[in-house]
Amino acid sequence: MDPTSFYNALAEGYHLIFADWAASRARQGALLDGLLREALGEGPKEVLDASCGIGTQALGLAALGHRVFASDLSPAAVARAEREAAAAGLRLSGLAVADLRTLSDQISQRFEAILSCDNSIPHLLEDAELAAAAHHLRAVLLPGGLLIATIRDYDAMEPRPGELVPTPVRVLGEGPARRLVFQVWTWSADGRSYEVEQFILQPQGEGWSTASARARYRALKRDELSRFLTAAGFHDVRWHMPEASGFYQPIVTARRPA
Ligand SMILES: C[S@@+](CC[C@H](N)C(=O)[O-])C[C@H]1O[C@@H](n2cnc3c(N)ncnc32)[C@H](O)[C@@H]1O
Image 1 (cartoon, rainbow, N blue to C red):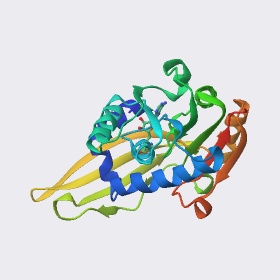
Image 2: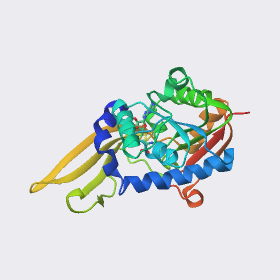
Image 3: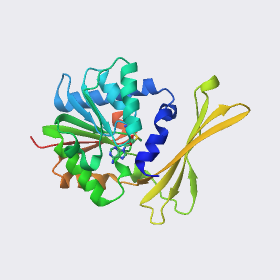
């Protein structure tokens, strides 16, 4: 399944992957707001969330007063982000279906900060796609602008080709909202990418209903991403690890030269 179909299929149930999506929005928004203030100073900023999904980070930051433009490859995810913003009484400065690989051709506005959070960039499997995305991430920034991206800690992972590798089952919610959430990973023979099957099981009658969808990720190492960012003209590329940042994934920040 290509990423568009994967996230279109998941969009309506995406919040079910979180124990409490509203709390995650608030927590992630506060943390990202801290990074924005540290790098760019106090006050609301013009931010593009370029892989917004259903709006986890975009809505978290909009709730704190930032002017957030939300874009994503998945039309269903963007439509849900728009609905969720309205439901929360929040205003997004713009919404668009746009691809990281062609972003600055699709969105004409330029921003003080750009986000791509929760392992979106590793959906780009080929070097040429990562190089294109790094170029466009820089091109949508104003001089001196800040990139914030988060990816899984692939440096800490041992590929396991030839096996079906399940992630731990999370039991989330209570009563009729109870659900089981887990993934099954299948690594490529060279250990450089893997296919994820995302499962969400919900009680139905005497049994369970199962929603599942598949997508491929590149096991992108931190040095690799740093090299693509530097080659695209970013400087001050810094990694913030979970122990120090309090975020659940490594965060990379980088600046467009002023
Ligand atoms: C794991 S989700 C994270 C969504 C959101 N940031 C969150 O944390 O809830 C990854 C997102 O990346 C988006 N994505 C994948 N490839 C993309 C691309 N080439 N351009 C833009 N978005 C992309 C997907 O559509 C999906 O919404």
